[in-house]
Image (tube, rainbow, N blue to C red; front, side, top):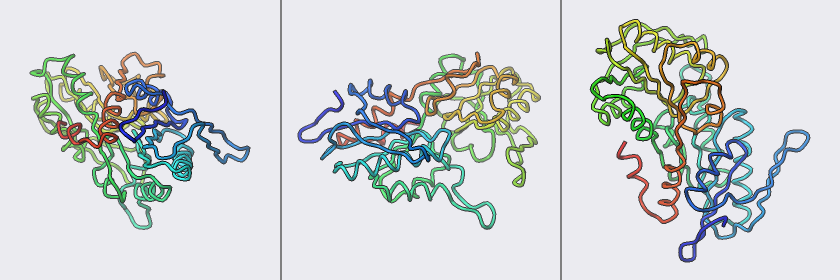
Length: 323
C-alpha cells in the first residue's frame, strides 16, 4: 500500500530523485510504498512533477536529500512541495537528511549571503509545514524556518557501531576543531571516553586550506575517534588524522553523518592512514565508492520512527534527547 491511516488521517510518503534508495528503505520500515510520481526534465532543464494518486487531505512526507547537483534537487523539492499543496494535501513535512547550504549559516565577511536562511525561506514559501533534518551544520539553522523543525542526530547510530568494535577504555573522542567540541562532548558521555581537540586555522581567502597547529588532550597509544558532521573534500579530517598519528595515536577512526566527498576526497581517504571511515546514508554516494575501509550505516529506521511519531502526534524529542 502507498500509505496507512489512523482514524480519518492518512500518511503518504514521497521521494524526489536525489536519493530514492533511502526513501525505499524508509518505506519498508514504515510498511508502505513510496507514492508513484512522474518527474521529468524539460529540454531547457525545467522540472515537471505529477503525483499518480490523490493526496487530498493526506499527511504527506517528502524525502529529498540535497546531494549534488544541489541546486537542481532543491528546486525539485520546491516544485514537489508546491504540487502537494495545490493538490490539497493536509500537511507537508519535508525530510532533508542533508540540508543544502547549511555551512552558509552566517556572514564571515561583508557582502556575503546567509544562504541557509534563504533555503528555509524558499521551503516555507513553497508550502512546507514542517522540516525534519539530520545533523544540521549548526543548531541555529532551526531558527531560520518559521515552523516546526525536528533536528535528529546520527550520534547513537555511529557511536554504537564504534562501541561494538573497540574497547571503550582504549578510545579517545577527538573534535577536529573548536566548533565540534559540543558534539564531541556528547560522544564522550555516550562512550565514557576522554576528549581531545585538534586546533586548526583555516585561511578564509583560500577554500579548503587547513593548517593543523596542535593536539590538546592525551592521544598517545589510543584509538582516536574523530567526530564531525560532514566530510566534504576530506582536507580537514585527513589533516586532523595526520596530526593525531604524529602525536602517537595507535589508530584513527573517522565518523561523520554526511559523506559529501567532493573533488579530491576519495583519493585523500584512500591514501590516508585512517583505519575506518564511518558515514551514514544521508547522501547516496559513499556506499558506491571503491573504498575498503568505508562503512555506511542506515538512518532509515530513525527516519521512519520520527515519521510515525509526527503522524501520530507523538514525541520526536526522545529520538534526539538521548544523544
